[in-house]
Length: 482
Image 1 (spheres, rainbow, N blue to C red):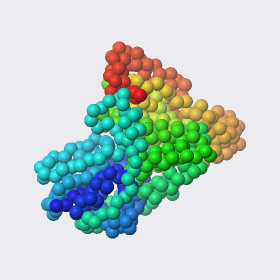
Image 2 (spheres, one colour):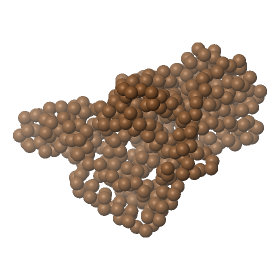
Image 3 (spheres, rainbow, N blue to C red):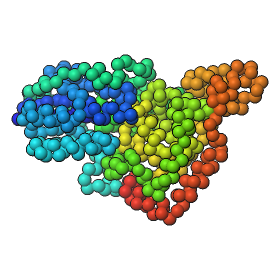
Image 4 (cartoon, rainbow, N blue to C red):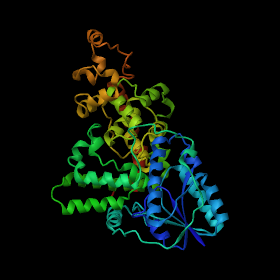
């Protein structure tokens, strides 16, 4: 009899419960599947594929060094892989960590459940985020999560099991990415994750809570661990364990910033819980009273201007160009991009969310769609916050350094006008060699006017009895309860 360990979004050995279980078996096949349906969606980009490739190489090296084992990597439909393996080997158990991904992934899991049941194979799933799978209780969630993250991590154990080699695979066979298309992208792998965590805990965390909002300072002040958490090259529990040791045992640390960071790790799992409880938030409004609000007024030209960084609002465009070039953006700037698209441009979050998912290396459906709905005002329970892109520009990039880096068309515009270049006089345009709407577009909307219109529309729905009644149900199901 042979067992299978199915690596998914848990590309690590340390603190990987499924790996710890399977190495006690007599015979094991270690697998990773590039599912053809999943990786060929339009929400997937080279940022994701190259991060996975890095991580699999790192994982393969560690398996070879510590266990003389090989990782079998497949490029096929998941069911085809498991049919092949179950026909070639006598499979007893399939071990994996639970993943909570979009509908396409859920459908594959449902089909796998049916196949395994038909074949008499037991699927043993482990919980790597500490969410409540059964006996859901909002009152005990925080306590349960703290217990989960405080559980002592067991060291890697030696194994005498037979690791079966079944398949060779070259990443280039995927056919989608032949070259590294961005010099700014983050590298994957457990080694990279541990290096990031070490540098963050040793020095980069200083003033984190104050520096994380600016797109310039956040590049180094944020942990940058989010894609590693998304693909599981390091575990939440490992991060929290080292974080607690730092807070409790060292004096020369910014404890407020580290505590703030720890809260965000808890929120990460909180949003995974939301998605587990209601996966439909990927494609439908959390509060159904907002159905029909934006769907029939989608403007393709505004959408194209937003997604290409040509709205005429320098800070919005700089942030969009930045994320398209790097695969990352801090939380506040993501919220601003979404808010601007949803309110000032009045675009449906279901389309804008799919566009940005391919540029977020750390794309995590539970967080992604919850945040899009929060910033679009369709949850019915969160504060309606419409970001003013001009105010954010002055606040987060006062001298326009970030803007000039990502919008070279505005390089010569003085600090006093870099945030609002449409205020340049004809004489100033002539002097700078800039022609409004030519070198850089004029604003595609009137910010003040569209903000007022959006606020009126969203509040008209929010004040209705139907929306208020549904909001109570949303709170009872999803709101944090300590």
